[in-house]
Length: 499
Image 1 (tube, rainbow, N blue to C red):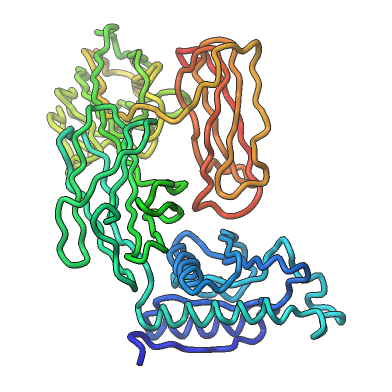
Image 2 (cartoon, rainbow, N blue to C red; image 1 turned 180 degrees about the vertical axis):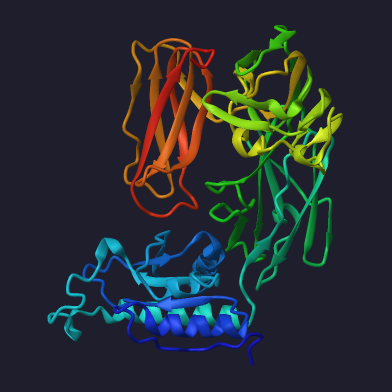
């Protein structure tokens, strides 16, 4: 008598294009069926050398199903070595469910020990390892029973957002655990750390049924806070963390997971132009620069502008920094005069095109500021560019300013402060899953940008974007959530002004 319906279905024509699973997943989607999860069982009987490895293929949406597999296997001590394999290529019936936004994982013999006779005439019964096959079937039964009876070990939590507030914050999680939870000194914990410091832990401030509540202390602006939850069962045998991947019992969770929840306490700063007033002449560009002398990663940005002009519709106004640019106002306000106390703010209710001169108050810019500059380094030159497209109307840039909310860059480890050249090293380990370390040297003070790209040349992550002094550095690249495949990284260096 299950809490959820359990369906066993065999799909045909996988090798011809997943037609069987596609037909089933499409039918579920069109009927608006709710599928809690799919276990695709594929190639689970070949283990020539008795390695006992089993891969579980998943995507980021289905990651909790992998951990359901892992913990049910651990609870019943089946004897396999369960590995997370985050391959997301079109290589199994699970993909049909991913394409319909259903959660699915595939149970698959290890790619390190893949059946070399697969799809060949030599793929005969004597090649199978029946003991390995038996363990895999046990793992299937354990997981399906756990799902059907809603007996999976899970922690549900909505991560804290970054904020400008420095006050203490309440944080909570909900527990689904199939066995009794430990109490006393081994009760559930919240571990947290400030910046790159060591983890400390908190005991629950309160508990109500499945909900545990904690109070994180306040932190100063510019802080990065990392945290994770942990609980263990009352028999002192099993431990579960959120995010998944931590370990340690008595007390629980002393080994943190490779990833944690992270939020920032934003700092704020404002800078005003010292190079104004400047004339705005017909059919020419006007530039004015504000230099920002501090480092930080942009989380929010606003621009305040005052200028006089006899026809605002002649003007194209944009903001530029370190190779990026976005328009603030594109030829709006035809026939009107001046921008007076105009604040360009992505959160404003009206766009600049909906306003009327002199555009006093808050307006969304013609294109998003955050969409272009979020995650960028604030250090360097920020340039206001104004182009007057027609003759006959002139004006004056009176003044302008820029306001930031920003996070302090943290996470680069300096090995030593001696380096004789610019050098980028091979990452290690390589191959990696999911973390690898990248080392580089710089011989003098530089604005340093380290980026990762996929095989198509698309940027997937900015690892470093700040001014660093002479030295040798290491950076951790966390590939969690990225498809399995080949990635490249590049190192760019500029003078401290970003040129």
